[in-house]
Image 1: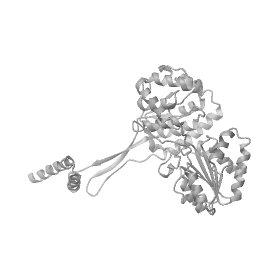
Image 2: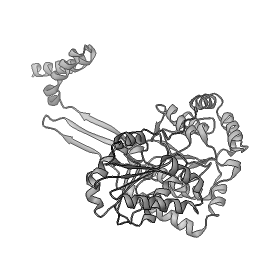
Image 3: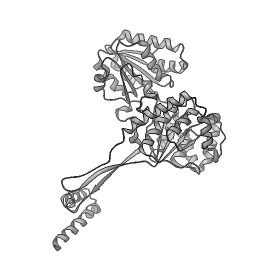
Image 4: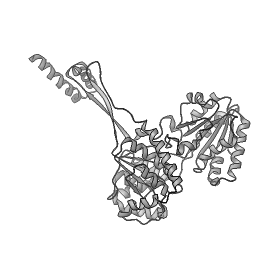
Length: 438
């Protein structure tokens, strides 16, 4: 049974704070294990990756078989039914079109003293894309990670997709082909992250690593950050639905379950201004859980972390939603645009009752790699910008240096950085000498 909260109750603030502070991340102490795996991969390279793959995925590899061959990829792609190929192709087309609009523009201008200033954007040289392959394997995540990198102009895309017992997911490999991935390694876990970050005899290192994974993958990404860039440390999935009573309770129930079925630590929350509607949705969830394939996982998530929150009005709903800063936010209300305008924090917003979050997971166009655990307060979902670097540009003319150089010299002296000031003064003196000669 989920929690039921009502903003009219005297203990509402305390119960809401308790809900906000619930720890859903994997509490296993994995960091020491991950640190040892990373150190081992750095020391032994290919052989360490091979040993861990045999241990965790029950797959015997050699340096030559770490990556799928082109013929193996072709054979796996041939297994994909035509209708699934068409669906992935449509998704790839929409995701690519959406992300192409994100590409920023270079800028350059000359200011009033004659200095030329600006910036330029360039892609990282190589990106490593991690796609889970244990309890679940998601071709949609392959598209969402690889296509923004491809749009950004990344020259080399390498993918790691664990294949437990040697069983590959043909859909993932077909998605990789659609996304322009150069190499697909059949390895996973912390060892794959370490290999992509530091390189081995066979696996070339990358500059940025993106993609979801279990607690070991997340811990490894945290440890290699600085050596390489990462997208984010993703926690369990979450959805918050704001709905009025003019919705079908079963629709809302299914939306809540769409995230609850991901894993037992996922969180699904309904905020409504009608308590009776909230109870109707909860009953609909219980009914769906009787037949849902992943009912054990979804049921535990709903019981342990689910909540139905009743508020006085939609303005209050927006305030409560911002406190959660949810990964996914559905606005199933009469005027969703007006409500969205007063909401500050959300990874992705889905407007109106005809826009289920599941559309965003697959085919909508925006990225489904989103900030979790309230991090939407300060971060954004994966985009083309994650695979680009901004380099600032500046050029001084002699007149521009005369105009602002003395101020730079004074600031350098105030910070007791003598060489800084002298590097400016030397040029100013040269300009003064030229003027004297003239």
